[in-house]
Length: 238
Ligand code: C5P
Image (cartoon, rainbow, N blue to C red; front, side, top):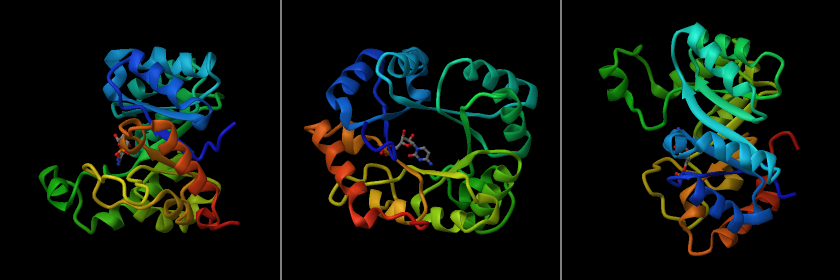
């Protein structure tokens, strides 16, 4: 089985393209992220098929946010499927409700702190508390973790600071915004390489376009796996 620290973001339009990608990547990838863009294209069916038929781990990136009762019901529904990670927003009532909904299942609840696409101007426009965005990310990470999240989603730049929080001991940090050296950045702004992200405290890196848009997705994935196996990808605890 390949190293499951690499999670491939399967941001393709539908189940058929997803299955094709999984076939192309074969045993070079063992963990997939399926997000909202795939919801109407059969995302949950694909998640189940990859899990049950292909033995892959699945990260369902739904970023739930609603009143507690609705979040709890939604998470209880997802928890019936044998999936590995699920995202919700990191607000305390949302995380607590998700924890309740997950019940005794093994599915990990990961909290989104502040979307990396938002800057201070966006937070002002939404009447969000004053302060440096990085400080608010740390504060929200601590709140989400102390309310029962199993981990947080963070940019690689934030990973080291979050890892140092007492609340983060034994918790997961999963980082998108990861680019191998020389890869097209796309719309990602503050990127790090897979090895740097792991060295900064990430447990898993999420990589999408540099793999699924590559001329050879399998080679792109295997190059990242080789990087993760290198001494540069040493975790802080090793
Ligand atoms: O193609 P790329 O590697 O940029 O894909 C990154 C994946 O991680 C996408 O599915 C994107 O939606 C997701 N993501 C992100 N930044 C966040 C949260 C999720 O890029 N803050």
